[in-house]
Each structure stands twice: as structure tokens, then as C-alpha cells.
Length: 264
Length: 264
Image (cartoon, rainbow over all chains, first blue to last red; front, side, top):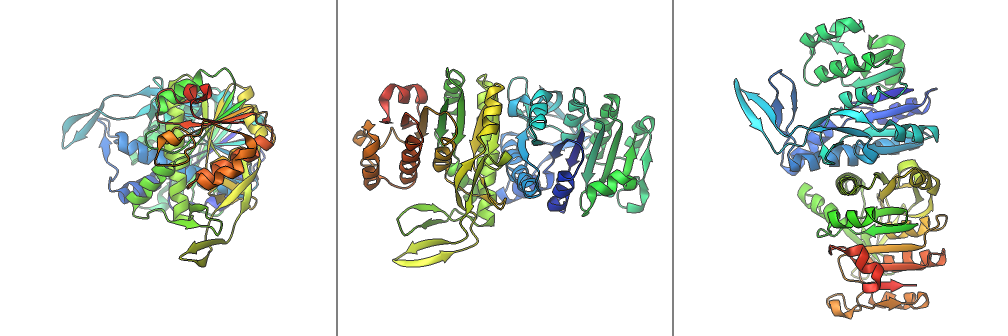
């Protein structure tokens, strides 16, 4: 079983990636993002996305009630349905789900976050955020056994049944605890892991598992969470994780052939 | 098996309706609308909903590419996910789906619509609209058998795998062709079927099946499609259809006790 994760880059080629997924010779779970579409919608509505930075330097979105509604519209609405359309068109019998459906992604809501700004710590309440640590993988297996391809995205469900903004990459890691996943493909708007994000030739083509923590020094933005998720997935028994470019016409084939960053 | 359909009225009480659904003694399929939320979002984005009127006097939404995106965000995104949250909170293991998922709702796309304005006929192309005439009810039965409650909404999928704006009430009728549905509850922003929509005391408490076509003369807006869907559902073997108010704290109990409009 393979997980295909596609980030929310605006230039992602849904039609060609959908065709590649339809032609895979192993059952797949698709997970997609929508961060750029969310930011576009937030700007259109006049409530632009606000970001917070944790004391350890990890940035995330400040998710109050309105930001959560915008997130749901972009992830569960616009992008999830558009992915289903592209996959059905490609002959893949896809089913769109959020982590809240059937409790597929569950985690604890963080009721207070610490935001660091100009060396000052600010407490943020009124936030709907959390990290997925459990997954109803039985539902996913039921769908796959019956010939359907689950297409998953945010939000997740807290243990108190609130919707929470979560990180897709860490939610994927939680699924590898109980699902027989051998490979994970993560596609985004870069050719792989770059030592210098402004220089595509600085790509690292192979990272050994034990080298991953050391890569945090080169990681910017959401790449830090990709590293954290990948470490956990490999610890849970996944053999290989592939990072590569979602903007190509042969994204999956290209990265599985070792042309992005391969981590094992 | 029962279908609970809840319209997109802003004053719908999701929490109490979710609790009533969780307590039903028969498996349920939930179908919800989001027309008012769609109109709100369309206004916020600065692309207000446009309506067209067919030669037979039935109004529908003009669904170009942008209107379809707005529809998806409101129906599949905001409202579907909020319903899942309310149902999970109430202890009902709900799964949110659109008609496109697994081809649950399929219909033919109408590539040209006729709009009548000031006695002139105008051809409307660039529209993503269609009527559902087939349903993948096997997927719904698979989920119900495994203890999940499907929560369905727009859009549907055309036979060419395009997303289409469809009427939820007519899609429900299509599901009754192959599912063993005995009762349908339709909740909306009125106490039942009113002879005069401005007068709540003009409610008709019982309509016999053969009297339904005659009710078209009193029907305004989307009520015409409710009548059409109800006629088809009764023809497909449904015993009773209940129309009532979604704004109460006991909406389902109230209407099942005969306090709305009962059609049989």
C-alpha cells in the first residue's frame, strides 16, 4: 500500500497526477493540501491568513473560528472535490474524506499556543489546532478492499469532537502506525529537498534515515514538519519516502525513479 | 431505512437535529443543502448568485465555473464538515460525502439552459447543471452495514465525469429506486407546505399522493422540486414523506408525529 501526498501548490497538475494514480499497481491512499487555495480564499474574503511562530521556530496558521471555516472551504470543499473530479475522470473510483469523517484522524486540541514575535512570547487562545496521533484506518481498509481510493484532507477531529487544523504530513505518519504502508510519495512545489531553497541545483538526492534530524538546519517553513513526519513514518516501518515536484506532468513516475529526494 | 434531508436555512439547529439523528432506531442517510451559505459566500467573494427561470417557471442557479467553485466550498466544504462535527459530537459516526464520491449521484449534464426574462428566451451555455438519475447505492449500503451514517450533499458527477450542480431533492428520489427507504423527512425554513408562503397558518397537514400534482399551483421556488422529488419517491415505493421545520429544537420528532405536512 502506498500513500501519495500532494501539497497545495497552485501549479500542481491534477489531471496528469490523477492519471498516474489510476495506473499504480498497488492500492493507494491520496492525501492533499490546499494551503495556497486557502490563502487565496482568505484574501478574497478579506480575512488574510495569519501565521504564528512557536518558540522552536516552527510556523503554523492561526486558526480562529473564521480561519477554520476558510480552511474547511478550501481543503474539504474546493480542493477535495476537484481532486475527486480529476481522479474519477482518470478512471479511479475516488472518495473524498476529511479527517473528521468516521474519526479517521484524531488528535488533542491545543487550547493555547505560544507565538514568538520580536523575542516576546504571546499566548494565543481561540485556536482550533492539534496534532493527529490516532487514525481509524479500519474505515480506510474497508474502502480500499471494496475498490475505492480514499482521498483525505484536513480538518481532523479532536477527542472532544471539535474540528481542528492539523498538519497533513504528521497525520500521514499517524496512519503508518496501523496500515501496511511501504512507500510514501510527497509532492510539493520544488524538485526535492533543497539545501538552499532558492537554488534548485542544491537538491539532495538521497538522505539516510539517521541523517534526517541533521537536515532540520536546512529546512524552511513546512519542510520541518515533512522531516518530522518522515522520521515517524520510517520508525513505523515504512521502507522509503520520496519527496519531489508536483508541477511536472510525470510527478509520481519521476520521483519513484529516484529523481527527487529519496529517504530510506 | 430513512432519509433525513435538511435544507440550507441559516437558522437550522444542527446540534439538536444531530442528536435526534443519533437517536433514530433505523439506519439513516442524511442529505443537506447549503443554499443560504452559498449565497452568503458568493456575496462575500463579490460574485453574487445569479438565477435563471425555465420556460415552465422553475428557477435554478446559473452555475458557471466560478459559481460551481463557490457551491463546492459552501456545500461540500463548510456545511458538510459542520454537519459531520455536529453528528460526531452527538455520538453518530458520520461520514461526509458529495454525490461525486464513488459516483454516488450520477446524471447528464445539461449543456444549454433556456432562461426566460421579460418574455424573451435566452440560451445559457457555460453551465454545470444536471439532474441525478442514477445512484451508487452499494457504497451507501457498505457504509451503513459497517455502522457509519453517510452525510450527502452536492455536487453530483456527470456521465462525462464533470462536477454538476444538481437538485438534492431529485437526487434523493433517484436513491429510492434501489434503496429500501420507507420514510423521507424533509426539513426547511417553514412549518410545512403552505398554501400561502407568507401565512404559516395556511399549512396543509396531509396530502394524498394523487393530490400532489395539483399542489404545484401553490408551490414557490424550490418547493416545486420538492413536489417532483416526492412524487418520484412515492412511485419508487417510499411509504411516507414528511415536510417540516428545520428551525425547531425537536424538528424530526415533531414532523414524524404528524405536525408538519405528511404525504402518503
